Amino acid sequence: MLVDLLLGGLVIGGIYALISIGLNLQYGVARVLNLAYGEFLMLAGYAAFFGFTLIGSPPLLTIFVGAPAAFALSWLLFRFVLHPLLRRTQDQGKREIDSILSTFGLLFLLQGVALVAWTGTDRPYSYLSVPVYLFGSVITANRLIVIIAAFVLSAGTFAFLRYTTAGRALRAIAAGPHTAPLVGIDVVRYSAFAFALGGALAAIAGILLSSFIGINPTVGAAFTVKALIVVVMGGIGHIIGGLIAAFILGLAETGAVLFIDPGLTTIISFAIFSVVLLWRPQGLFSPRASVGSRHSIFASKWTIAVLALLLLLAVPLFVGPYWISLGVNILTFVALATGWAFFSGPTRYVSLAASAFYGIGAYAVAVLATDYSYPVALLAGAGISAVLAAFVGLATLRLSGMYFVIFTFGLASLVSAAVNWWEFNIAKQAGWYLYLTITPTQIYYQLLALCVAVVALWLWRDRSRMGFAMTALGADETVARQIGINTTALKIGTFVVSCVVMTLAGAILAPRRSYMDATNAFDPSTSFLTVIMALLGGATSVWGPMLGVVPLLLIKDYLSVAFPSYFSVVLGLVLLAVVFFIPNGIIGLLQSGRRAVRTHVVADWLEAMARRLRGNDRGPTP
Image 1 (cartoon, rainbow, N blue to C red):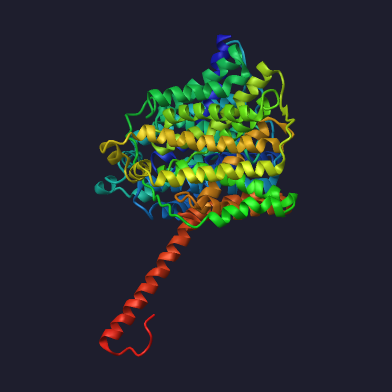
Image 2 (image 1 turned 135 degrees about the horizontal axis):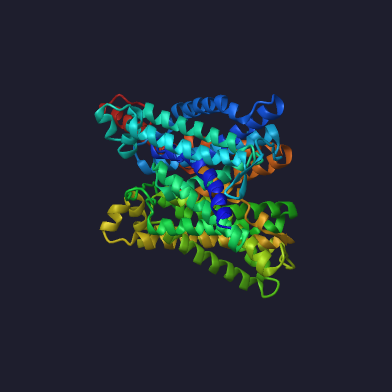
């Protein structure tokens, strides 16, 4: 049993180590948190699959073509897409957010292209699946190769960084990107090299893993989550630390399978990650890191909304079921996007946990409403989400934004796994039927009330001492602490409110379904759509998310019917366009246009006054 534990831990840990080396380089040196990292792994896996099945090329030979191709593609991506995006601002917080969001859009784009090109079917093949006997246990040769590759690549990368001139330059950039140019280091060139090398390592990992893991368009996201966890646990930029952290996770997950319950592997992994994050947030093997500063543009102004509210109240009285259903969908995402922006707008923390809290609300109603009552289910869902949000906040909100993104990126999977385990072991059933007599019109008005409540709360906050505190927090967190603001309590409290709003949106919408299970309750697309809609409209204004919901939701409904395979592609392009061309969203464009018009009018008026004073103006003053 001990040999099985060690060998299983080596296999899983080898996989995690192999997929994390490249990401460690990309973020540690190039300072790009590449959420599309797994998609390069996925594309390389497809290359190995087609090379093996079509022309008989072994995966080990495909590495000599796939790795250089991934290197070149990653280099071009950094030099001509990411670097121009990042150099437009010196604000490190803004640079980090832009890199996250742009690679997030790239994730959607590559997933969508793969889905259109190769459908969502798994593409498995068998290569070197012969058994190898080690210490009385059995392992297949392709898995053994992964373990060996993890050790070899980790050692090789460590030696390269430690003993070569280029490696020392990369370490200097990682230690101080602003001081490295003072000693003659070309930061852009070496950062591009590190990012490209990370892409090549991702391709090697994808090619090796494809021999025993079925490749599909969505396989990369799961690997990205694991790689992020390993990088953070081991310490950003610490290659050997990442190797050790990977094997710790591998042994823990194998131990869960052998001695506890296979359904708890994801929960145990996140528990270990949470403990490390709380105890040593800079990683197990890195020196203590400082909390990065964050800046935000926090602006919110009154506009006339009474007529719009009256119109929304009257909608169900004059329209048919289709328009009520459309109104319900719009109000659902308005509540989600506004709730998300309530916290993320002023703080710049990008939360990807909307689907987790939305699913908690939906499941609370599905499980409790029939046996107890609908109001009890709403209160229970809000209470559960408040406790979970407080825990997540305590674990991550005192850290830099990257850690928060990583944790929330996998939170929906964690909660979904916990629900599945509970259903299988405790409730002894999978899925729940809903027998509630709540009409679509009632759902519409409940969602409208939730939207009005969160908007009113936002406007009240802006005009209270809390609003000034949030403004100070967004401008400079260090200064905010020095003037006596309890930034930790402020962030956690705002985050809890944000999560409760998203939970109530899921709970209110739940009666529309007659059947609920974890797959549809914790759908990851809910998180993606929420973030994109909020950013498209402008997350720094209370009215911005509303402007982003309507156009994107209409596009989504049209594409899901007319071109279902292309929706992910369009979603990725929309997010990339928002990050590159309208970083402050539609509301920012409107504000810029209004300022430009006002400036033009004032300039014309001053010019006319000058002409009148000179006595050479015979026309009316504008």
